[in-house]
Length: 219
Image (cartoon, rainbow, N blue to C red; front, side, top):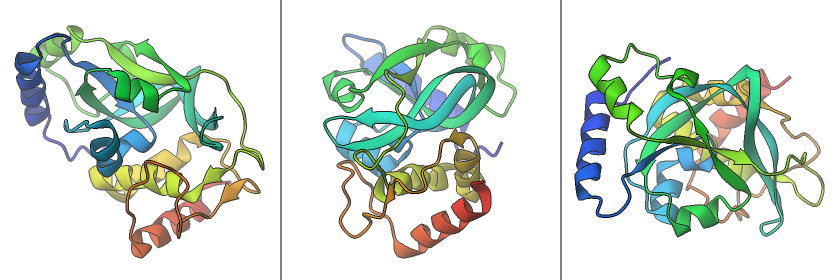
């Protein structure tokens, strides 16, 4: 797996964040949906730590999280020993703003041996990681997309933009291939007027790239 983030810089920023923290030591959260987008993460959750690409093993990502408040369906994750998905690890305090954003999920712990950073981690790095609780957002209730709760293109674009920013086209393709239950009839093109409230700004050329990759990789 390509890794365009310098892991030494990532861990130095984590150490600096620990020094600044005056109540809770930052947790590590693996974002696998819109939190992968820098714009969405910064603007709506005030999370500015560097993302570190990672594969989460023993979990499956799918279009199964119904938002009653926002009337749409998002990706969710649940345990499945034969599956894996790509995400971005970042450090943050799990505050009220993040809890509100992830209202339809619970923060569930994952272990270090479930994570693949695509490189050999030395003992000092593993020691740092061992001092932190690592979470993924586990969907509370699995519901497939429907007419009443569609998957909006603005949300898909936000997720894929985050992949593109960190890992390029390979990371975009990896997201698509490791996500189940892609909608067909229940996908809504809302790009001209996004219905996803934490959408990133996506240029037309990126949208065309995302559409083409989806056509090639969704069976």
